[in-house]
Image (tube, rainbow, N blue to C red; front, side, top):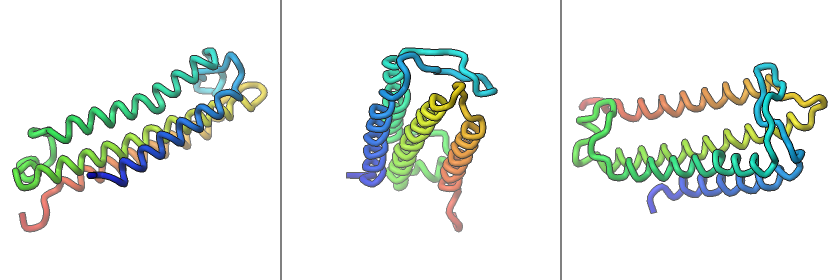
Length: 167
């Protein structure tokens, strides 16, 4: 099976996220803050059951659907917008190119699920505060880290598709 490690990591991350979200949502109040302004103050509320469904759908379902879509598209694609595409889409290399893109899509799915778990953890932290407040520094730290990882991931993709020396 191709991409065994990346699929295993995605499966473990998704299972851990499912466990984490299911296990901790019950500790939230029946009506909970679901949106916060830039100052960390709640501006919208939802029922706990609706929040749970939303987090499972957005936090696990959407990234898994994205990975499935990327896998389906990349594993069959014959014409892609890539740097040095003539080289990387040549018949002798297109299989490796597809495999590389599928693997990166799987890893990105794991990153997305992890980020949503972090957002859920922030929600838990906000509901432990009295008065209810979302800690700004934790939000910014998570966003900066996610942005840096995403930039690094994208840079790795671009670097992977440069021409090898002597080509």
